[in-house]
Image (tube, rainbow, N blue to C red; front, side, top):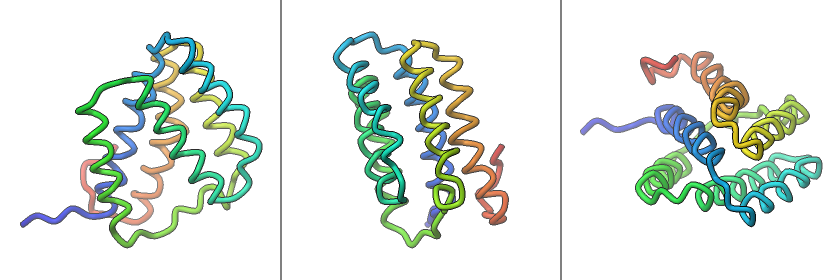
Length: 147
């Protein structure tokens, strides 16, 4: 009756990612924190959009294990599936500025590993949410109320 758009799903997934990353900053399980540290070491190897995509999937899966909130995970997965199931324009942030993407992910991960939830929220907003907002505002997406 009220179909959602790709832009709305993108907006929601960026909000969910920020909350997921912030919650992960509260994780104290040594094994999961070590896995995140190892994952961060692989960031310099991300040189293509395909590399970026694989990294993002692995990063998100690790964050889910760090947070362990089943309902939150389900909502995130449903929204991600919805957005990937629709024709979507390419957001070529990586192609335009791969080093900034890598540096941004590095800062988010460093904040998580420092167990600093507020810094993680700030970095996730700056490195993830702000990019999505700029894209949505540039498209005149009609997603409404973004900000």
